[in-house]
Length: 329
Image (cartoon, rainbow, N blue to C red; front, side, top):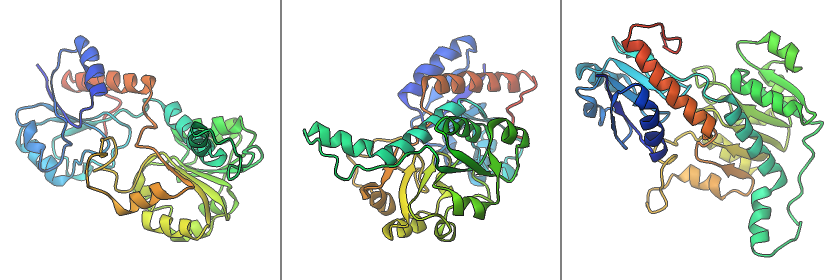
């Protein structure tokens, strides 16, 4: 029987995986703690560790896992920047590359509309029976220029939605999808041109050496005054210190974040009764033109079911010596 150590478990994870596991009969032990070099010994005697976005599978963790007999790291997410692939040794790694691009793309649009039309501010006012429109002025998204950084599945889903608003789409990606550009009606440009022309910039790229801190003091200063920035991808795409500095000058019109540079100790957890606080995160939360959600863009029924089914299938394929298209080589 294949033994799985399941880290960073939430109730919804356990409920879904227990249901899908009826078809696989893995022996799953659920740990609420995140995987890192301090908790890796919990996986002793297990064949698989199943991890999520904020588990830290670095060189030291991988070494401990291998020493304790772990053969597979099963990521229940698309991104794999938290795994040190150069030091994985004999351990194999699989992921879920396409659980629901629509979930993330739709959440990015929700953040954009919330910022622009001051939905949350209006909602809070109306609850107090204040029906004034002062301070709620937005703008038509129709006719605006949308800059999309990253045109993978999620980026293309976002572009498709925004085309329905009647916008002009320009995009930047190191790996251009010319077929999609023609079919969806967007244009590839260099990064500087995107920054200079876009009214709204949405990030949909993976975290790599090339994209880390792609939004920083220099790139923000090239943007239009009042531009809106949306990030539903990875927190470290944005340099938080620089973002706060430019927000304080009024350069940026608004920011929507579903991810945060140092989110590991906070996001996906209830910290309301804890005294632990992050200075930059607290500053951002306090700003009137910033909306932050807790890495929930993926969180739809369709996405969760796809994650559970694909993760179980990935594990089965690896241990049955079947071809696994989701293995990271």
